[in-house]
Amino acid sequence: MGRTLAAEDPERVAFELLNEPVTGCKGAEAATWDDQLGRLFAAARSSAPRTTLILSGACWGSASGLAALNPNSIPDDNILWGFHSYDPFILTTQGALWAGDFIRYVTGVPYPPYEHKAELEAALSKARARIRADAPFMRRSGMLDYLDEQIAGIDTEQELDAQMDAPFKTVADWTARYGVDPENILLGEFGMIRQEYGNPDVIPGAWRAAIFAT
Image 1 (cartoon, rainbow, N blue to C red):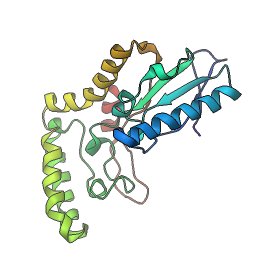
Image 2: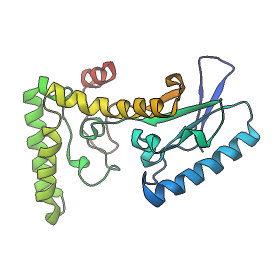
Image 3: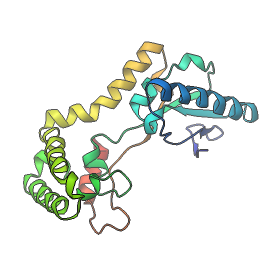
Image 4: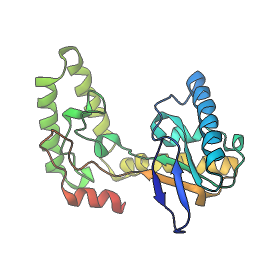
């Protein structure tokens, strides 16, 4: 189901119903998750009437997934609303083998990229060489274009800040729209990958510390 965690009150326990549901955020898939979340909540609340429950949206528990929910459909004052933020993905999840067929070829992108131009260019050269050598032949051109597009969106301070701020603005707008207390919002996951299993590349601790400090 999920995981337990200690809250500020040592006698208060929070329980996440389901981590990163993969259902889509729109249309029929969104309606499916609404139904599933409601049933999960009812089952958990019936056996744990005093436990703080953490509810999240679909789309891997993203801010967009949370924003697709109507919190008024679950009238309960012992709820935390959770989301995860890994934007921009090309920085936070670089090298991950489980995150699609593009990001696995990209490692060594520094944070912040505009302050480490030499390291950024070296990482891009390495990524392009990997894509040309190892990616499916028919996908290579598209992946190279996508790499350039993703880097172009984070290569200035303003562009990077905008991408990192976007999920939090989405959630802030959602809380304002539905009157949700911001103190009941939980950022459940964030950060930057250190090293992917089976991948020799390690992200320097200074870059990871900098993204946490942001």
